[in-house]
Image (cartoon, rainbow, N blue to C red; front, side):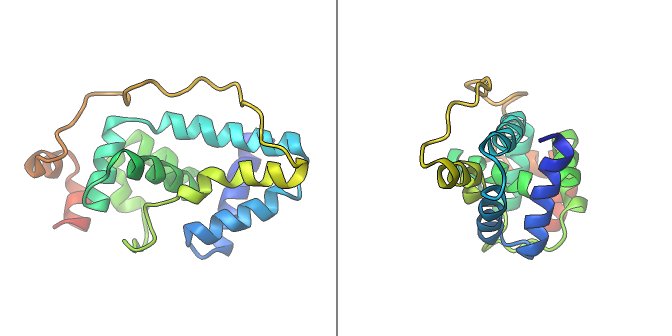
Length: 172
């Protein structure tokens, strides 16, 4: 599975789920379970590498603004959700987290920003196909600390300055 096929699966499931991340995860499991186990592992590698790539302080700050706070776990689930938003949103956010203000359409605080189940879709599909737990993906783990310079998330003035478009749209 190449990168284009990975993003097509993500996009197709999101569109069919009408943006609901839990429904998107269920649809991804169903679609992945129609592939061969090696393709499912390829999907998992693509997902995991993007998940690790998004382990950045500046993205955590953007998640903090969007979600009005983001614990370690909430940021993990946010990164899964961000991947689930598709290539354009993901790449745009990694390049410029404040750009999420313009990249995101409707944002429902009840369901958006939490894609925990998306992170398990490939594992569930692999188990359905093979009856065993997915093997190690042989991908380097993320560093112990996010990339970049730590931010003081409790300093609202700093967050408003660092993420002016996000702050205006979601907190202003």
